[in-house]
Image 1 (cartoon, rainbow, N blue to C red):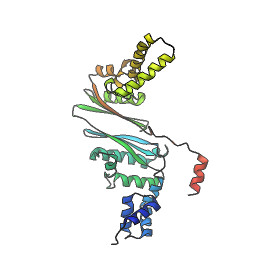
Image 2 (spheres, rainbow, N blue to C red):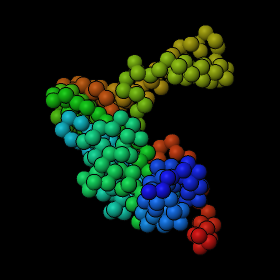
Image 3 (cartoon, rainbow, N blue to C red):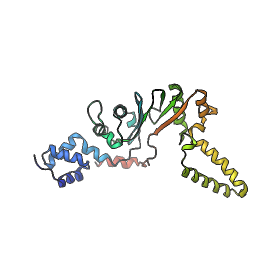
Image 4 (cartoon, one colour):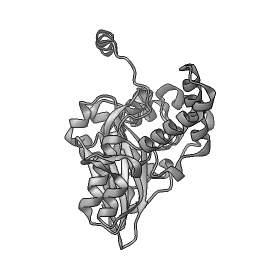
Length: 293
């Protein structure tokens, strides 16, 4: 077997755009022959996938999978919302969520090496999907949530997975837990309760509200009371238990929970593409680009 040198790995990486480990594996398989290594990568679809890796992926699906007392909430991104309707992509997302719930990886890097039921790793399955579907696909993030036997998961997926919410509730059944999850999907609270709001976030909002009041020309002696009232209103808008319950605006979420003898421990909300700056597409230019490839 030929000795594989670092310079060869770098050359293959530069020419194909694949990762270091993929380049080294291809050279080993090709016994150091550069052309055969390129062919190996093309046959496996790795080189094609790597070329798509710099494309912006802000669409896709999220999904929740529960395995006993463990739940996984995942987000897998694609370039267009059309792919989210693709059966192969939908199956991939579900398979990834199931594997993560079972294997409980500690990071995205570890998750890439988790094996699916067919024996392929998540990274390998994504590469194969990129080759078949023709778009960049990425496992963007996931959350693992553990519960006790006396606690209940509430799972809700909005519009098939554009938003996924998982609640962890003590003292109530799945219906109550899911109702709260639906509320969270709709109103997007930032924190569970006021105690969770970081002091620096409070201070920033306090400064903004104080300047607003002064710019309205209010006397300094009433600015403090105005700001206190507005800060309290703002806290009620961003904290889950203080929000008006979406199915009954006459009570808060906390009151709804109290009515059902329940306490919420945590919630996880993943919205597909949240925080990703989407690229403005020029359709004509995209067609020209594809024709020139």
